[in-house]
Length: 213
Length: 213
DNA sequence: GTAATTTATGTCAGTCGATGACAGATGACA
DNA sequence: TGTCATCTGTCATCGACTGACATAAATTAC
Image (cartoon, rainbow over all chains, first blue to last red; front, top):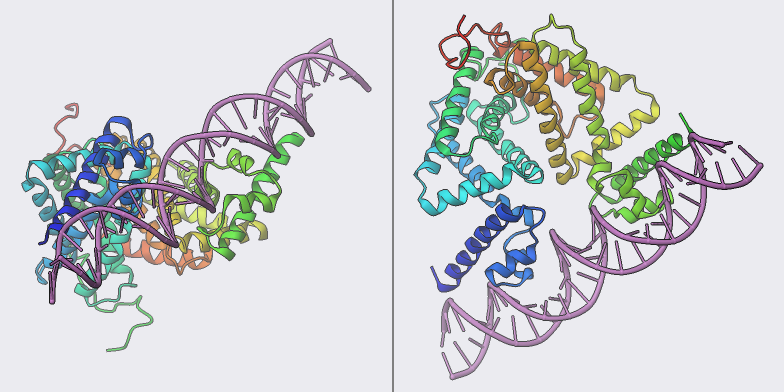
């Protein structure tokens, strides 16, 4: 990797760190892009060449996590049922967060604190999650051999996302605590859902528009 | 109600209608607050005395719906199980939308179209839904005789919200079609969830911090 | 009916987020 | 070293949003 690439990566990381620090101390709204840029000694214009918006820099780590979740799901064996695969992907993601080095873990914690204390960033997180939900549905539909427009893949992912979001609580920042909470919720989901609810169904009564066998 | 109140209501409605029309024809981003204000012949400053932001005027109807859903839930008899009460509240809300007069129905449809074609407004909708989710959880917890921090009320509301959001699809704008889609999804949820999953549980194994009998 | 009070609105100035255009600086590469 | 692509800073500008103050209108008191 060339000098240019490394420099860009360093600037990007510096912008994220400076932004998170300022957001934590002065608050998200009270922090201006100019201040972030000044901290890293780049022009405000340069900031917007790295991040599309002030929100973007705060949620860049969250966006990374969403991408990683999708990747972990794609890596799960086809033999797992869709919901199981989603849960395992989530566990893998939490494991990655727990294994992160000091720097990354610190960034993660600061990001969590900032997001949880800023309504606008909570909304942005929802947006990212919803965008990723579409991709998760596509993957689950593929695994089920179903269409992404079918209700079942959407329902499966919706239940998973709601569980994952319920973990995402203002009091839950440490990955270890988050993992515990996830397991509790997954156990509750397990008790509440019928066995085989996330398995492909042979076209029973309510499938009017599907090809006949 | 005095003249002043009526005038304010008319201005507010006019701002919403003008905004939705402009958003539909020119697009949300391309429409400026100045244009909306000019259409209603008030100053831009006055616009911001009625709505906190440009997003606010686009989502004011959505916010109303969320408030109505909460009110409908509160009106359901205590004898209904929490999830049943949530579903019935949703059905009542859709019924209200279907019974709305020409003016309101038109506003509703335009609002739906604008929101579905604008990522920023979809994100804003998520924010409103998530805010309301907290209130729904509180009400469900009350019905269960549980704490709002317990997992069960959060899980019940999360499943409900995910179903409700799955209805909220870009192709689903007409309340009648929406009602049909809701019923399909509720039927799927019914098949997937164990009987009694949303009923209060006697403190089994995993309730360490509750008072002993 | 008029005066006093309250409240809504308009005007103005200003901050901040975000973008396009252009010019200069810097790393990549022959 | 010189050329090229790319990164960066400067400048100008737009649009969302806010505070302060003055004006106009409705409400209330008398």
